[in-house]
Amino acid sequence: MDSAQARYGSQATPIGEALTKFMEPGPSGLTQRYETASQISALWTQLLPEVLAEHCRIVDLSHGTLTVEADSPSFLYEMRISGQQLVKYLRQGCPSAKIREIKVKLKV
Image (cartoon, rainbow, N blue to C red; front, side):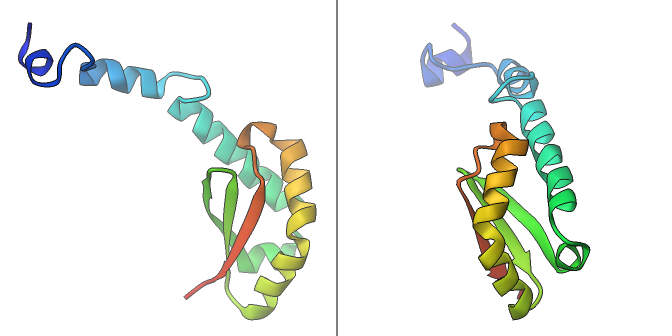
């Protein structure tokens, strides 16, 4: 028994093995997350009118919530009234992201 097994029990996973699993393609791998983020970003630029895209940017995607930052109250309002329609199109274009809502916040 090596020192990690002695310290953490038989459930311990060597760091190299854990990193390899994290990097491998699949729903839990880094590759899948990167591909999903790329798809969402591409869809975002296609769906938003240019003027709105210049003033609103994606800052996070976590647990089905896409967080967007707007640089002025007027664009924040535009994003909020467009949110449900955008969710619909983003779900269709990238179902693996499992987007349920768009949360819009004002850039500070």
